[in-house]
Image (cartoon, rainbow, N blue to C red; front, side, top):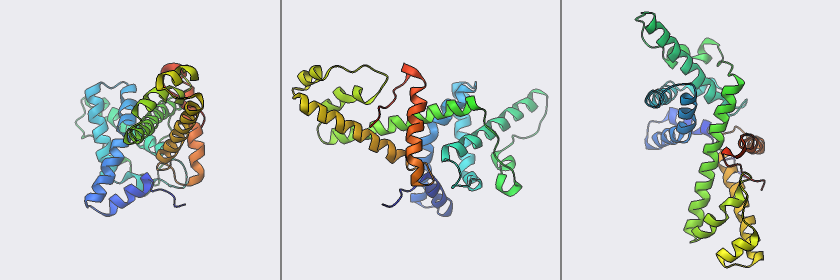
Length: 247
């Protein structure tokens, strides 16, 4: 089968064309990663308003300076490169704040000025494990939410909203689901039908996760590793967030 269009492809096309399609690709990119980036910035100690400004500034710089051109798309996942670029941007922001506190009047350091890694022969900064783990957690939560929304819409289009709402608990490993008998009584279905619906729902979640993840990697062979990583990330945080069951 044809490998789906990735974030790399979308951004590359957007850098070549300034039409509505390119604008849509950029808007989609920012929308998909806004929450993980903003959550990470807030986790680094910034207030809500300041984090929103920094998030907006980061995406504007990332898009306008075409920072993704510095990455080797065949080595590493897109989120890894994005976190490196974000870490550099936050380091620049802190440097500017420090200069201001010391009475300096130098202008803000932009991503374009200090982040031209390809041209300068530099690499993105090494990200501390704790930072990478937290960003991965936010990324995983976002991917799972997108996948669940896609399934919810799919079931709603078929008039099966109640089935999805009732069986959703069987998709995660962090909650104790009701018995099949209880579900069968609630949905007025036989036990065999309930088991079939749960199996289909889990398959749908697996497909939705792979569809979303496929757009953030460089090659098809990376998809399954990313799915496993997503499950590991969510499971490692215990019961505070949902973790998808094996499908």
